[in-house]
Length: 312
Ligand code: AMP
Ligand code: MN
Ligand code: MN
Ligand code: MN
Image (cartoon, rainbow, N blue to C red):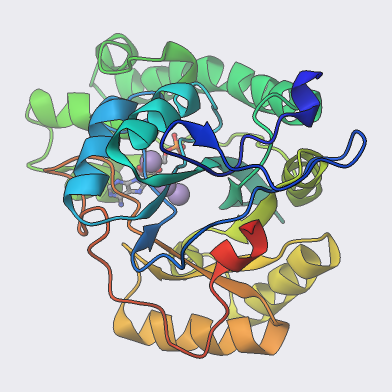
């Protein structure tokens, strides 16, 4: 069977629970149980998380997660290890990724779930997306050197296990280590956000690219942490969600690590309005860095359709 036929979506106890495969199409195996605690957003050292995929898996299971996705930024390199660890722990696993896009020049993240991780369109698209990161990081280093903070590119690189995924989080960790600010939020606020000296403009991929790759690989596209896009007016938010839906997007994070109770109410209303399925994800990066631990978010509002239903 060619790789694109292999459903890498859901899997438990070392056995693929594939329901059926039709011709060359990608089909989802069925879930045997309704998960009580799903977490579909977190990171490992493959992107800007602090723990290896298997350790993230162990933490998820220890925290009671029964259906889990690893969603590293722009890279699928942790999925094999994550799935194997989840199998060992008897925890259901879904392939995941968090894709960096821009829409009307606003950087936005799109989570992909339940896709075939060998699909050439998705793999090739992510490869092209990763290629820009080192060059962007060099320019960030130059911008910081110009305000009297030299060596930050090299310092940040030493914090990145996967250099092609060097991110602002690695810059922030290094800058905290040399005493530029006390914590990561302080570094982001003063140096690494739009208008601040270490922030450089960058071309990510389009919304259509990300949704197209995810769908081509048989997956489901979800808007990540919609409450975090401060540069978006309410009108932009509606236009963005219109575009997302028109392009085939199906889900939105309603409960997530960066959402306040008001955000949850607001995005639950939008999920109903657009008939989106709702997702829940901690966005866990590491023990000292995340507001919410794996599996520790409140449940979704009960009337919403949970996104895992699209994966069965
Ligand atoms: P990048 O993909 O290189 O633009 O980096 C974005 C990453 O930086 C996010 O995925 C978060 O992990 C981290 N990040 C962004 N904003 C903040 C913030 N205000 N405080 C802490 N971490 C942040
Ligand atoms: Mn991150
Ligand atoms: Mn994100
Ligand atoms: Mn994330």
